[in-house]
Image (cartoon, rainbow, N blue to C red):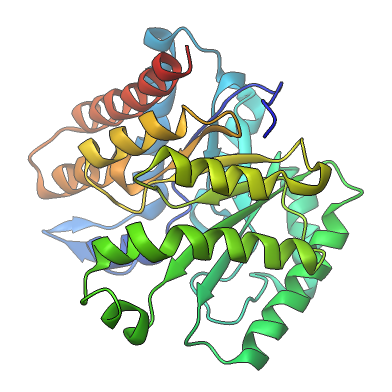
Length: 303
């Protein structure tokens, strides 16, 4: 396992679309008598990120955002102009078969924004039929090949879902699945992608309970001379104490260089804002506090 010589990746993720619909209803609708404006809500999140920087002693170029074009185009351009590292998704959200958001014109959208990283979702769900998996893999290979000679780093977000049979094998416990089965499945899936020629520069993975499991993931991600590959953790909407523990353990593994955490950082603050129990300034301040705590934990553990 190699220690990255690149700066840490401290990324605030808010490319979410489906999650916001679940929280507040459709964009431009009404929630508790307030107009729902996803772009405006995302600007509150971005304000929180910028607010966190002085207390952390960080510059804009030391942090990043993961944001979508649909509701965050203006923020993406603002972040890029400020020097904040920019990651943007290329996939159509939460599809069993991988699809590019903008189809054959995906390249125009990437080149228009010039992101530092292009993110796609890679789903491992053994209930999905083999033909669909093969189709997703072939499409991801095409994107990987397109990105390879270009300056955009390829970020693969790996989500592993339990089938009913897998869940039954651990007594129906999601916690046991996450601890006993998911770590090995993550390693197997990374290897499968590598063997298919799908080469990620960054693996964005779900949190794990054991340092040894993080090490196994990083070892596979960097196997075969892939020393420049980074691993980062995602939040999965987990409670703040869980995120802190995942961050603390990931930081103990050299192959893990940071995080891209979303809802766990901002969901409560946006709910409070839309409920009328927090002002805009209070919401962004709480987002800044949570983001800062994750950075501080990672830095402290790393030493």
